[in-house]
Length: 316
Image (cartoon, rainbow, N blue to C red; front, side, top):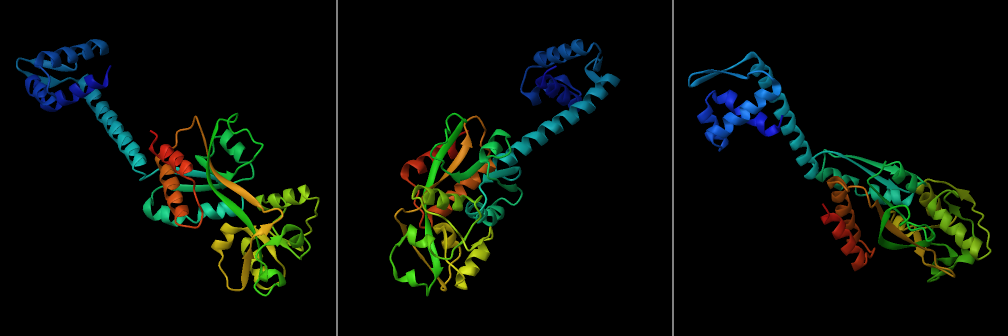
């Protein structure tokens, strides 16, 4: 039983005339008669009573007609749902991020995305183990930091660099070091500091740099709350080390930011996706919106990365 035969059968039921049905289907009358006969032989029962030039639907034909109506309605519904997905009118999008700044960075584009695609369900899955999210097939793509010693190729992951981000020294505007153009890392660690907990990605960069320089990190206050860190700095409780991205998201005349030197604290933000996973239209739309947003900021995306992103967005 083929869909084409069911389509012929459905039109014939509506026309109850072989010639008229054949004309509507744009096929010959003998072809239509043959296909209906093949269908009847397969089912082992007549679908029509031939009454001279007239035909009538048999009881078996009525059952098949009813089921055909459901079948073609389901096909139309499926097609419409797929079209909606393609046009990003529906569906679900799950984005993987690391906790902290990257979750905030991605979340900043949620409102614009929702306004453009209100029927897409969006979930930002924040986790320290992005790799596990990929392995469990829980995310469509991820925004993460590049791990220098991680084999992305072995894990079937494609990596596209987005931008390089600095960690900055942030303190009250009246802080003694505010007059300096750059602040040595060692000098910062001697100050009362308000930092993220050790599990936070930003803190890991700080601890790693300190370990290499054989320095110790002893914060005065640890908190995972970004708002709390900025409020404490504004009240001159202490200084902090935080990403330039977060500095841009929390402008304040009460605080100042300065580059860090000896060594500078730098990390690379990347887009990750699985080679063997279909990137759906909802995901592509979010990536496009996010990249456009990043290009309108001070963050610089390389020409090669732009080309890689465009290739991804154009892929079937």
